[in-house]
Each structure stands twice: as C-alpha cells, then as structure tokens.
Amino acid sequence: MIYVYMKEPAMGITDIYIDAAEIGSIDGYDPAPSQSQMYIVTGINVASSGLKDIKLLIDGKHASATNFRGACQAIMFWRSA
Image 1 (spheres, rainbow, N blue to C red):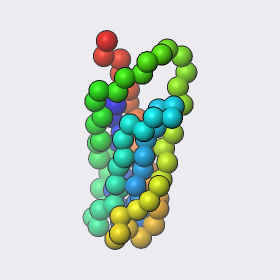
Image 2 (cartoon, rainbow, N blue to C red; image 1 turned 30 degrees about the horizontal axis):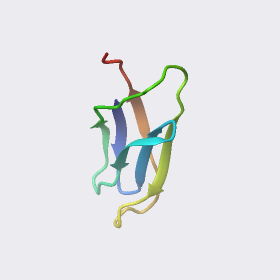
Image 3 (cartoon, rainbow, N blue to C red; image 1 turned 30 degrees about the vertical axis):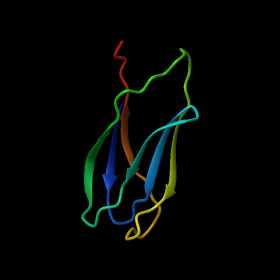
C-alpha cells in the first residue's frame, strides 16, 4: 500500500486501518509544508475476499504541531499474489 499525504505544521498523527487491524501510522508534522509525501507499507495480508473497510483516524499530534489535521492525497493498493 502507498499512502500519499501532505506534511505541514498543523498536521496530526494518522493511523490507517483495514477492517479492525492497524496497518500503519504517519506523523504529518513538519515545520516546512510539503506535498506528495509517500508512506509505503508492505507485507499486508488480507485473509478473506470481499469488501473491506478502510479507516483513517487522527489520534494525536507531534508536540510541536499546531493542530490535529490530516490530509490524504491518495491511497493505492495492489494485489501481489
């Protein structure tokens, strides 16, 4: 999975879930704003077919961040087997 996001001073920490399993956590804080940052997660194992719930949860922030915002530009999944 590739998660494309934006970093800036007001961004919080985003957790990514497939169904109820957390697959990644991203701290979006950076004092200098930048777009199209990539967070890559490998080794995700989805045990069954069918529809899946994707959840993005802002659950905190860096000590220097000014807010709890999140900005997702894209999420890409691909089948590897």
